[in-house]
Length: 304
Image (cartoon, rainbow, N blue to C red; front, side):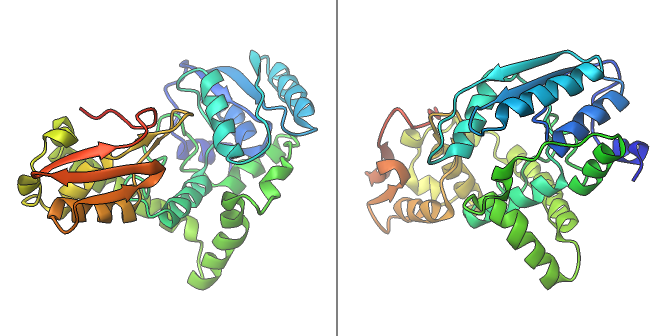
């Protein structure tokens, strides 16, 4: 695929727009840089050095050298992310903290497909099954990872390789290296475009559903009457509960309840049980047809 064809699949802003690019030095982010320049954008490169790998300083030097070779301004952000549990989430939180708001990233269609599967395994609802769609910070989400890598190689750039992407102790890597090839073998076809098309359809239906229920978010959990909630269509009630029971973690990421938690919560609303235990030590209870959510107030989202 030529650079022109690849650019046609991307969704960049208009030529001349000033943009910040998150560039790790890997093939996807280098492709982002190349294609942003092809789109005649006013580019500034940002590299986040987590200092979590022995080669991280070399990665930073490489990105600086590439940016300067294109006469593009570059900023290196030094952050400290200690190895250990939830490393990916903590590193993502640090990147979000230091990168300018709206920075473009090199997520491709393959990343979208992997995220769909990861979210599916968590029992995600419509939101989780249509990730990255229509996100202006993900201009490459209609491009394939292999095509982006081919462009980088054709331009004579040797992308940096992050060996942690080969570590099968990370669930995303198992999805990428084991599950995706297995699904393609079972389906006897490339599964990535199928998952991407499904995400598009679900996103459109989700947008329509959001219009239908746009007034529901104003109804606080404690103000709702379970007798009225039981009259709602089940899809509407589930969506309202997902909003009301979402939590925000220490990194600022919002997490909706799992499908199992929603089902337990529905039993409370239906009057089958008086309370249900939720993640994080929280408890949803019903008394006199009113709901109450108890738990760690530092992790609960405030909805009304």
